[in-house]
Amino acid sequence: MTLKPEDAALFYELFLPLLNYVNHNYHVTTDIHFTGKSVEPAKAMEVARFLWEQPSIIDDYINENIFPLEEMDILSNWKHCIPGRFIIERHLKKGSIFISTKDESVYLVNGIIDSWEELLFGVPTPIIFDAVLLPFKDCIITDGLVSVIPVRFGGNYTRSFKEIYMTAKRNGSIIKSI
Image 1 (cartoon, rainbow, N blue to C red):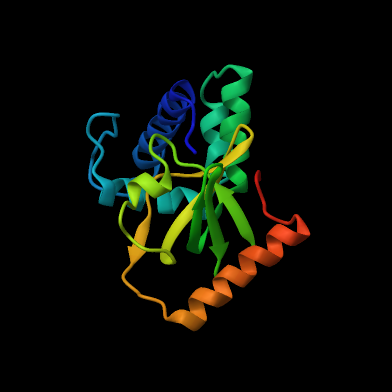
Image 2: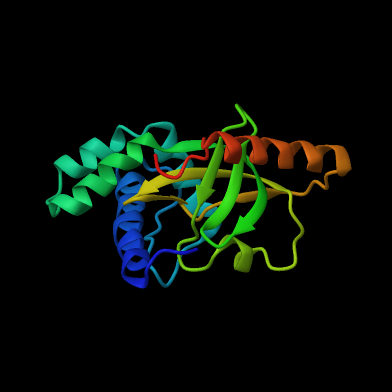
């Protein structure tokens, strides 16, 4: 599952200027301007990492700019981001199942433009990576800047991840919004 095209566009309309603000004000990386057409992933990830370590920066950004209420709410909710290491256990029609390696919380995560299944086409699950989960309207997405860890899991680990997912499904504890 992915965001509607207009929501995907809105995400980038909010996220890229926020990265520019962070980099301009905190000089995280060399002078660079993030636009929809030219994003250097490594530099964007560096700036985003700085932001997610100090999400209160978002308050300063909101206070220094004028936003419609919906956009202000989206930005403000990003302060509740969940950075961490996650396992993609499986892909569903409604999104992909992410399991936190920190506390085994199970999240249903949507793609922004492409689904996680499309992005990882041909890569067998489970997959481990570092990412930041963000609330976006009524779902969860990532900031799009993930770092895959090249690890293959054996059968015991794969079964344990499946059991974590199945337990969350039975208990109705899959987190679908932050």
